[in-house]
Image 1: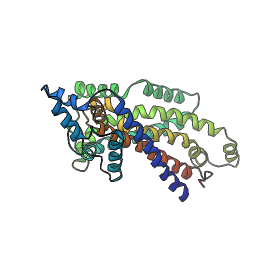
Image 2: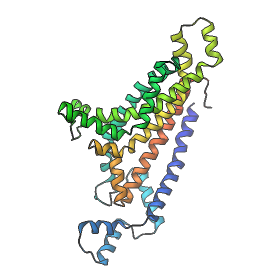
Image 3: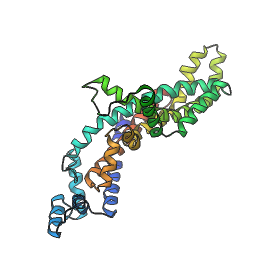
Image 4: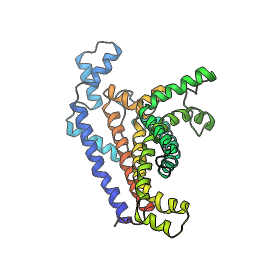
Length: 317
């Protein structure tokens, strides 16, 4: 097990290196010049000498291989450089938004897990009954309704019926937990409902498949309680594909809630991602892509470890 963990950790390095090479080259191939874009935004005329000086200051006048090596050396030292647009350190720009995005992703995941696993299991146990039909309608509705639209409905409902709006200014949980939860619980519910719909359907299918296995019939034939059969024999094996779905969705939530963040006025990683791409901020975009890539790789690593914990038949040697 220890060798497997070490091997997986080492495999993260070439994966992240491949992502770094691809994003670096694709950003340089894309049309547009960040220097011209910055001066065009000010509305002022800039002579060629000023533009060349700005490119030299940003390091854009150097060969691509030199830019790439400089960037990689900074990553090794955990220094992503400064934003080409704001001039502030990239680590600072990401850090002030990462808490919001990470907390929202964790809360949405918690909502999804609390909804999907009990409902999916109940639907499988009550197959083809009104309970099963209700859960299937509930999950299909979650797949059909975009989370940002549900967020708009939540805000309008509070505004029209309660005459109240969630706080618009983000407050850290460590500063004021009540104000923090008052703001983030609603986007977490909107995103978590959409998130739970996928996991609910996966849970139902997995539990139904496991309940037809021979070892489940054997456990029932031995006279075990139905609760023991379900929790100790069926649910653990059925959770393997469900955990995969939950893990991938969690990694996506780190930087994929752009529209939802706009609806609830949240300045998170998703908003920063869009702004950096729009402004051709190469260094910021590269750092954000690596962050999201690392999130997916790390979550997959954790999911693989959970496989071995849930199913003792799995041994990574």
